[in-house]
Amino acid sequence: MTKLDIRQIPVLSDNFIYLAREPDTGCVAVIDPALAEPVLAEAKRLDWRITHILNTHHHPDHVGGNLEIKKATNCTIVGPAHDPDRIPGMDIQVKDGDMYDLGATQMQVFFVPGHTRGHIAYWSKDTAALFCGDTIFSIGCGRLFEGTPQQMWTSLQRLRELPPETRIYCAHEYTEANIRFSLTIDPNNMALLRRAAEVKELRAKGKYSVPSLLGEECAANPFLRADNPELAEAIGMEGKNAVDVFAEIRRRKDIF
Ligand code: ZN
Ligand code: FE
Image (tube, rainbow, N blue to C red; front, side):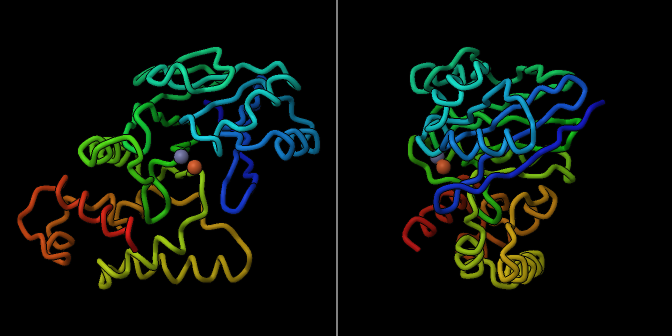
């Protein structure tokens, strides 16, 4: 078992790019490079040689650095087979259930449509790390640009089944805004109130609120709790099915 050494690179207004190094072989993956320059600079500073790019979905703030990084490093670009035409420079297509070898460790691929129709996530069991792009955010989830509430809810339910100690390496620092919204629909949730206090303190110190722990998200993130009867009741949807509750929470967030 080999654990990834993960570094977080903040770029643009609120994006995170990740570098993940597999220590046995020295393989280094960049996850969702919005830009090339800060990634190449950080790799140089760390003396890490980039061998892979792993993309979760096609949005520019996730693939914008692909071609320039590939040109500079000759790395292999891995992305969703479910979205073959929209990932610049893709060399390897992976699909749901694939185990992609990153040096001596493996990344398990989950097909998680909803935010986009081709979105995937990468899970390292050895590291207890999930790179989920714009599917789960801390106390939030991605907007439904191309998918239905049913698709996104199914995707979230699958990711929710991962071990609670899994760290959620999402692609944006949206947590404070997500908390402001979530408190309007789930104001008495102790786990959410705890998270709100914690994030307030982190952000006041200039620290990031990402990664977060899946176990804590399951208790505090309303988008992962659409099948919770108390939450349904809190938004006046007592007895409604989880997809409808999820769709309503997402709709309210979209106009918040
Ligand atoms: Zn996106
Ligand atoms: Fe994004």
